[in-house]
Image (cartoon, rainbow, N blue to C red; front, side, top):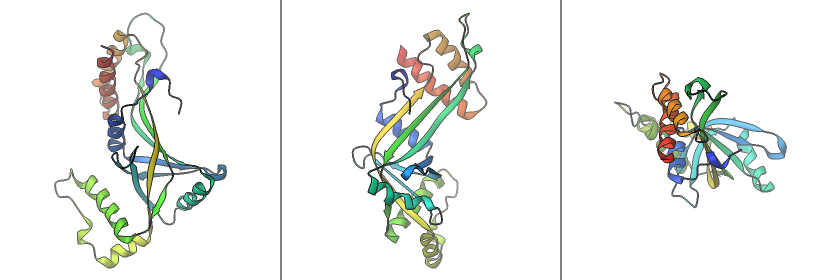
Length: 215
């Protein structure tokens, strides 16, 4: 990912926050130049290892998991892309008489590592239960797998491949108009903070943090 110094995000806590909030990510593998990509929900454990650990699963019918062994043999890695908040920026929002052009502000985190398959049925079940608990937590009546029969769960587990990715490095970008004068950044931030679209408002919140960091 192209990351100019002005937009580089090195704060591990903020990167982890993006990966938790936008955890439906894109797994990309390209052994032998044959690119495959899958959209999957991920769990991120920031304290597992130097750069954390990713956990996910995919359908066994999805051929991408077969790339994992090929990547290992070639000494290559997979890429997981977490797309954070993003929004179009109109040049009219900056104010003033200086010529401007449109742009797109966004936050993104790229995680690299070699996936390894989780074989044990108990470990696979635990991963599913963690994913369910994470996404059911905000519901008034959270659902769980406890009501399913063991035979049904066994069949479901046979139909998926669970895996984990020890993260070797994280690369993050927060392009938030930090390269603009303070007054222009403040003006564009104010527009997005009033946006109807929640993703645009979230971008405005990140821009507000960038504005405060400028002092």
